[in-house]
Length: 599
Image 1 (cartoon, one colour):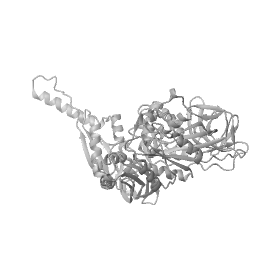
Image 2: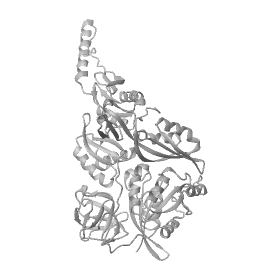
Image 3: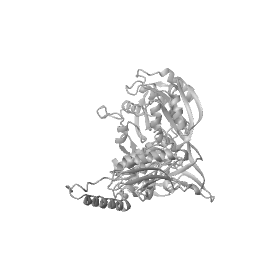
Image 4: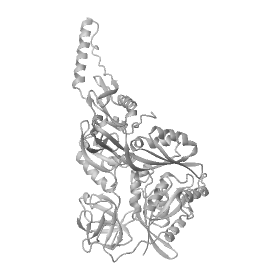
């Protein structure tokens, strides 16, 4: 059996899903009448946004020079927030097809993906796509690949849209990507690299077999928790599930074992046989850590439904974490950790579409390490738990190293943007094709609040960026607390740099004044830092015309009615509850940035 396991990796919008479509067509996996664009992107959200969110595995058959080959193709996402999906896919492969746009050249995420592939010791096949476009410059891009990525193989020139030279890509996969090790006689070792929940069959596990055989009816064991199950069905994935009698070393497939407890399955775990198990698990994946945190609260009494939905979603997306929490303003919900703000948006939208749950989402935050004056240390991912400055000896905030690739004409505007975000330049290098590569270090909190949109704006969409997390560093940070009608509103608390506290507080108060509707009583909006009010706005009372029925008559009667109304409004202000619409929370999700600039 001739097998090739490979992934397609590229910067976002360089044509991964389109190339996968053409490969599926050429191998005959999809009949022409059933073919559609982005066929592997089966999630409605992926098709709407035009991006790949989940890595997809598909088994293909291809004949070359009279020999039959089996391809296990894993299509991967391109956005920086889903790098973890790429890493998981590469761990199941021996090679990778690196796709580069002939009009844009090497981008920031291209560099990151090449680094990931090399960390997994994969054979990289360079491919230049979109050669049919008028602005395509394959000669320049080929030179970029050699100079900036240190890949000496001659790139294959293709047009995935028109199907040009796709056969040459398949030929290179056969000739250059090594055959997986066929260690069939050793004990069973299968790496779990994906899973999802089926309401009728339980948890479906997607695995790569590294050694041994897996048969239907066999008893298996999860290495992490020692739980055992009997295999009910195994098979291959090819735009559907196709049962088979066994999977052997080198193959990719699925397992159905009647697993009802979704917490038994862990991405990166090793499956082995209960009889003659392996001595140690596969290396698996590095433990992913969330970097952006937000509270998710159901708009209605759907707390239990939300808990079940999060557990099922976590099966297919192991990169986000959740834990129960309570808010005085929003009630019972969950504190969730994400890899980035796009990841947060995708999870929220999937919960709405796939599980029918409408959510309120608090302002995103990062996790801070706080050293107190009494010598104790704690990690804070919720601004409500952030202690007062009097208790703090030092605060450490997470930093990222950002790599940006952009045309030289936008260097000035981009440098100003980065300076406003408290970023520090580490390196600047000139690339082929009138481009520059910038490396900056900046606080993660400055990046999660609209940085991507701001970068696209100042570069007119031509800049691309990637980032990696580095060590936390000291920061002069304070907590902004919002008081609504004298009551603290924990859902709108925010951690900002002290130098930006006043501007940010002023902007926050003004934004809340716009979003909260008028009530029958006056509502003060105050923002305080360390017990001191530094910004205030007032929502005026909605006036009811109590004199409407007074047609003439003594002025004293009108004054008496107005005084009575005035006293009533005082009591309402004291005891009345302020109604905050859902739109206010949703609008503040993408609100501002911690620097308080670019407003």
